Length: 148
Image 1 (cartoon, rainbow, N blue to C red):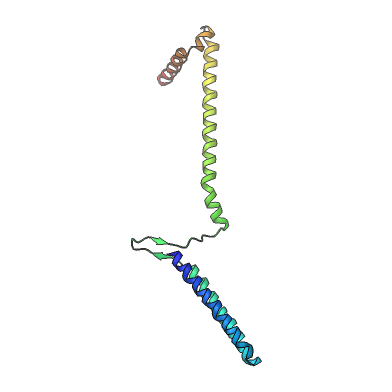
Image 2 (cartoon, rainbow, N blue to C red):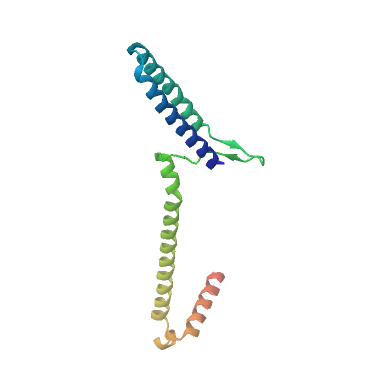
């Protein structure tokens, strides 16, 4: 639909240039006062056409058959649009930083728990390198935390 509108506008512009050229050829023989009146009339016609063109662009929305509203594609880039479009990116980066901070904190607490168990227990340090024993310690710590 936009393509047909653009073609119609291009055709209208082409015809306008053609007629303007034809009128310019004919007006070379006219007296000075008539040519000045024609010049003023052309300027007035252009002045009246520009607001109508701008109004048509500003109100270029359409209600479709299914009830949806189609607006013009030109949203403009003002400060609020730029801020609103960058807000999801800022929230995403803040969320990723929060996740990283929580994971680092969790890892530090896990290492601290292992270190405190190693220092307070009488088991040999080789027992803590065994994966099964580390799992046993995690389960044992969670069961003691629930009992407290």
